[in-house]
Length: 433
Image (cartoon, rainbow, N blue to C red; front, side, top):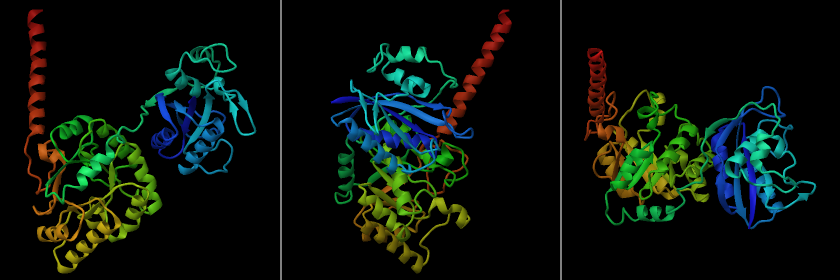
């Protein structure tokens, strides 16, 4: 096994998601033993108007020789959208370099080790010093930390930007999928709720919820958007990582947000980002028209949950939230959508805002489980937005969502009590003076 230092950089597109995806690919080459924080850095040797980079360094223990690792890095770069030919130092979605390979000293046409300029770059030395400050590289006499302290560079200070972490969701994913797959045939009702943060996710997981959805409804109940349309892939990846830290038992599904799965290729690229963030499966809206996307994801080994009926991502086009399946033709179209998703390999289908009788017919017609939300009691499972369930979002709640708690009221009472307490301190202090 050889210890490789790998530098990661991105200054084009969804930079953080690109770094996470690269981390996932690198983990397939061996064992990632250390990962630095992600820093936002000014471009070096680039055009004046070049966008800012995100940079990090990790150490990888791998049995592969340096030339093979370098070829794998190039494959990862191509897979993440970096063209093989581009203007020198132009913006790129990903940049991967070997900094060192144990004690190897190497100089060939395509690879020099250690990297010839690593000691001249703050965006390399600082993250490297975070994980291996006492490392003495071949050809050097002082450790990395000393190289950083002695660096004479005009680079501005680096900004600590994010945490880069290996995916925790891989552990137990197959078991979670198998448990979920057996629930319909066993006649077990499926309990599903949404989460967008660690404490909510952990509470749901510890209290027996079967499926936890990182839903794009977080756009409204967490981020304050008017609907789900404005939610971005980067935001979904961020919240998926947070939820993953709190979930070990339930199946965890993440929504593909609006206009991130228009084509099969785009769906695959977007889904890979959410899977790398820790999802066990992804969910997309649409029926027959989304079968090519579902097939592409399934062929890539990514489990998919479908979503038909009322589609929140289409709310602006439809002028509001409207019940589906009211006419025979509309009902037949929903059954056809469900059958197409089922045949394409969906592991479940969410039925939202649907006439109850139609939802019951869909449930009988498909092999995979159905998850209802405002679709009557005859689905294989039910899901609610957790904020609606516990009364944490008092400004709007759909009519089918009965609140079982009053979290908003409890917060208001607690804030009022604390406010009165603080004001009381001020009055007491004035009196004692």
